[in-house]
Length: 224
Ligand code: SF4
Image 1 (cartoon, helix red, strand yellow):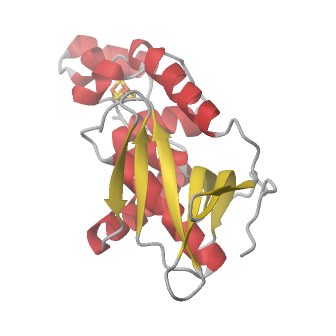
Image 2 (cartoon, helix red, strand yellow):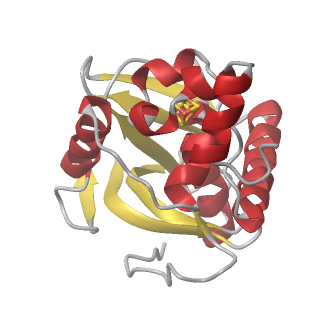
């Protein structure tokens, strides 16, 4: 089975990065600040995340024999239908008993424990859509590998997850086309967000004259 290892054109207008889906479901404002306004601030969580992916991509994007199949690291993926492009940390190609064919099984590396927001599962499901379109294969499941605990959590790509992923892709394109960052809303995700100092969710989420004045100063087209 052939697979692409070359870098696809990243600057095509109609394509968004796969990992932006994760950002979007964490917080739409964070996603817009990253992708529309190109604001990026590292914190301990983003640095650990980058290191986790770095380890997964340590080997070049080539296939390695492993057990009863092959493993490809750092494989480029692309889905025309959803306008998504990006890299899979690892794709296992497992032998299908009886048929001699292979079944792709994507694995995404994450630094910490399972997140409450389920954004990792959507990012992984989007990788499955890419593999299905590129290879004409059915991709029924994949896994999140949690680096700290060294545990794999299997994810089934059922209909609800597929619909959620398609909806997230649609919203991602809509957000990017709008060119606007939604207003800040204070929520549990803000606690671990590297943009908190710039975003000022406490200030911008409150009512009253001071907050209105701050909103005028700091942001936000479309916030009024
Ligand atoms: S601080 Fe909160 S509202 Fe602001 S970008 Fe981060 S998660 Fe979103």
